[in-house]
Picture 1: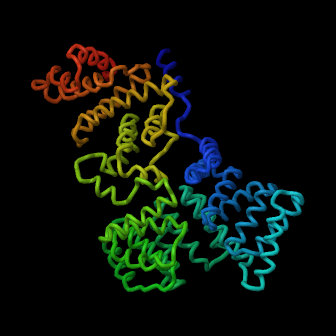
Picture 2 (picture 1 turned 180 degrees about the horizontal axis):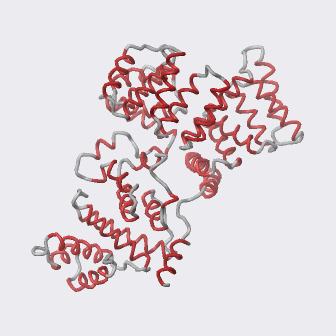
Length: 507
């Protein structure tokens, strides 16, 4: 009965992974304080967590417009409009963003629609200006027609779905698109990538080869085949494709960008730098992807200072990238035995069927240079299978601020302080030492269920080390040694050893 009560108490703990409303409200507060960098970061997260909330998507779209990211803004605002077509604000901003990307007929259509919906609305003057501007521009430029508008909107929506890890939805949308527009090669290329991310490499390659048969020399298809060969570690195919790509000299900017980014991704940094550096003169205000690849290519091809300058430009545009420089992985991997530097080991732990292994994996994640990459992966993190304590561990890895007025959170934080004390005590987490930490997470999981208070952090760390190392070499391990190491008395150490022994899994 007591165990059932404890289990229910843990299951009733509110998830500490904030939801979309939480980040949306933080974004609004940041906007009120004119902290636009923070507002953008919070609103982006809100949109990721609430992809069907029209109001959130609308506000994020406005921020993207202000950042000059017009195509992404169009996709967000168009989606908000699709969800709530009767909302006048959505109609007006759809008119405005349509004009920004050259869809002037749509801009006029939505501006006129807004005026009919709200003849006395707050944006009427702006809507009238849009109509006047379109009428002037129609004589100057040939606007996108309805078919082009449909293609653009669908591809932008598919791209965002893929960015959010919604590959099944992206595949469905892109397949509908190529069924209607049989020669829309960018859609085929994106569909191939979506299948590849869904671990269907054969279907992805079949689509890309179809593109190359029907549209000979399609650079994006060749580059995507290179990416697949790289991830599949097919060195023979990759070598052949790279040799082919080295002979290509694209004139247009889009193909230069694709070629340079592909070379950077597969580690051909000098070639990547050649093409990306050649594009600097054009300027890429708001294009975070360009500066990410340029920074990486420049740094690893020996242009270290230029790489750092490019990264600074990226961070100015997206402050969330601060601290995630691609070269930090290399700098932090000086100790090859340290498991927090092993991407494969961390993923193995996080995806284990054992909860205490996953808890340990999240602790390592909090120390790892691969944190951002692993968190962003669409399949590694699976909130649905985690217990309340595991969700707390994930929140800890993400740097969540806990409420120590809450008893459960307070006890959890102190249990993690013991893990941190062990981390400071051990020179490096090697394959052998991992079992010390694994032992602690077994003990702490059981202790948390028993509402243990974890009062003396240093004594608990000393007790865990003593218990662990005494099982390895009982003849040379003394309580005196570990008491002195952690600055406590032997009697205190004995007390906490006895307390922790009750949480060992003897059954």
